[in-house]
Amino acid sequence: MEFLVDECHKRNMEFHAWLNPYRASTAENTRFADSHIYNKHPEWFVTYNKQILFDPGLPESREFICRVVRDIVSRYDVDAIHMDDYFYPYPAAGMPFPDDNSFRKYGLNKGYTNAQRVDWRRENVNTLIRELKRTILLTKPWVRFGISPFGIYRNKKSTPDGSGSNTNGLQNYDDLYADTLHWVKEGWIDYNMPQIYWEIGHPAADYITLIQWWNKNATPEGPHLYIGQDVARTMKAGDLTRKMLYERSLSKVKGNCFWPANELLWNNQGVADSLKRNYHRYPALIPAYTHMHNRAPQEVKKLKTEWTAEGYVLHWKAEQSPTNPELAKYFVIYRFEDKEPIDLNNPKKIVKITRKSSYLMPYDNGKKKYHYLVTAVDRFHNESSGKSIKVNYKLVHVLT
Image 1 (cartoon, rainbow, N blue to C red):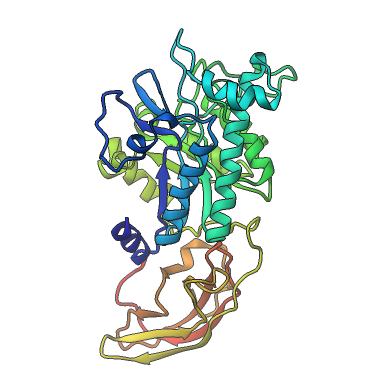
Image 2 (cartoon, one colour):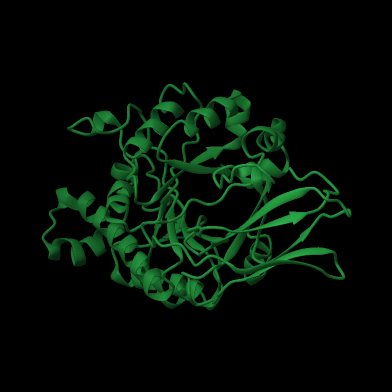
């Protein structure tokens, strides 16, 4: 993980540590390492449909999961903790979840009746999410907490007020006991990334229906909404263009997550080519997490150019600290024509996003004027105002 974090940060990429909250094994005959927590506390676990899982009803399970997250966040420079959609396990037909013991001890004692066991299960997951957010906040307040829930929150027919989506499938709320909207409204997560893996026009879970529903139920200034895309299914259905254009028309959608990554590396049916050519042709800045911190860092200082052994270099000064997330973490370099209006909302003008405080400019003893502008961005992705300088030079190559 240390290697991955370092290599991501060299490229100014973020590293989000991906976890399954409860699942220890997908095969009940797994032989765990001698040091594994299962061998130390087997009473914390249950077996369901050949899976070995932490019992979500036990406080000891939550405490251990929080200790793991605290360890990751404290020892590694991760940018976020990311929880997958496996909370209570996907239900198997005719197989009740084996939590009778923990329910007797912690459910009945809290006043829940057997008919209210589903509410108790949801509260168990709510408690874990709330405690994980608090754990992260007390360890490193700039580290974000994200969830990628199953794509359907609730079906319309399951909600007395009709507030669910017009779909027919597995539900976060009723089947996995994951009340994602509650976490969004309470601010316990920093981004929500529903796995909307179906095609446009799918009879049970239409992509357009679901993306509209999640956009409607997102909070404008709260946790970010990203859309989880299934690359193979999208490309097989020929949906990429319609999906990308439609989601960009929605006000609260901040971006995409393409799953799995190897489909992009394989360029499944030209998906990577299309993204490069059409939808991600220019650099994009990560939207600021203003619900966590809403103040930009100071602008860079002493912006200068000079000749070096490497070439013509633009460099600047900025206050930085690995323990102060409000200071500059990385920098954005924009370039405009001499008489061109300055527009920091135009990604075509970004020539570099870097964690270095310098930029090697292409130069060929020319006299063409360009206007460079450098901004500082903090760990919450708030961007400062720009410091600018005019430079005379001729481009060696075209930057795209």
